[in-house]
Image (cartoon, rainbow, N blue to C red; front, side, top):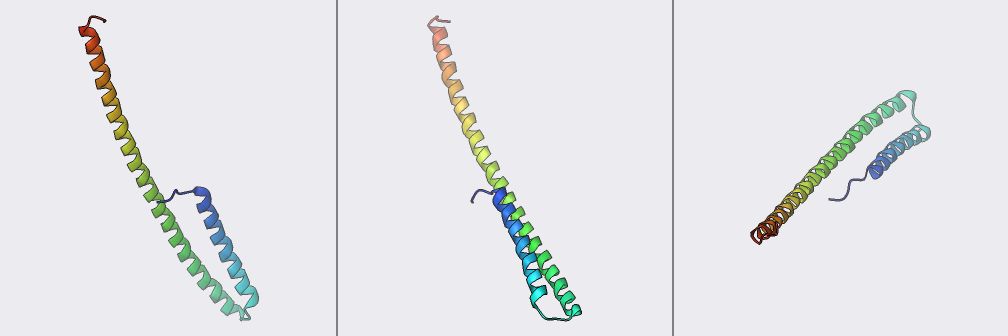
Length: 106
């Protein structure tokens, strides 16, 4: 999975909102309709945009949860490797200490 970048996500959401607003304005300006038809279209567009925003929000939430889970997994692997390395080093140092004690150096 790729790295989740908050700047890219924010830019995407801003672009989505600007594009939706620009599209709505263009429709309102260039479509010859009566006022009630235009209001109905605006209402329908609002419904569609709300649905799309919800879908985008869910997608971002899912990606965020996936990212968090992958980072937790990476952390656990790193933690296990560090604990193993520490245990090996401890055993090595204890062995050296015991050898030095037996030889009377300590």
